[in-house]
Image (cartoon, rainbow, N blue to C red; front, side, top):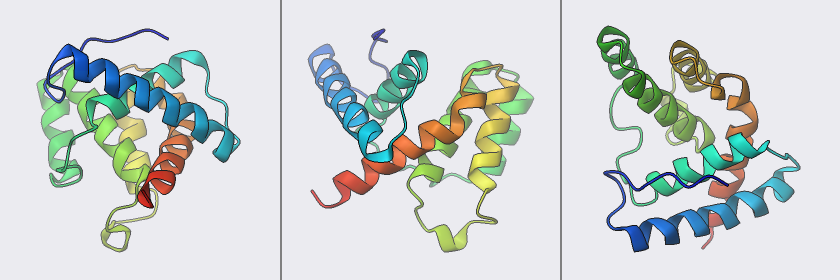
Length: 142
């Protein structure tokens, strides 16, 4: 697995490695539970996505349509990936699902954002979402 350095969501290298290790363990266990095996690159991406967002409590608070529009207008790949990642997290852990515009809204927006960013996760959104959903279901009772 490739290690990506800590970013604004993780404080300190020691915490970052703890988050990555914990998230790696969760992803591996969840692959078995979800009966879905991710390829190495997708697995690594999901591990790091979970680690980067380990302490976030604001997932889904910003309207995705507005952040997507801003990302498209900025033409910055990092902005598109941020929107796509947010959509993947929201879709995988259906918070306030009854308020979603449709059952596939966040999957569609996320897949589109990954596609506009020319990122391989465009093709792996569904399998990654199954693993993250299994992680959220598994940790909900802890």
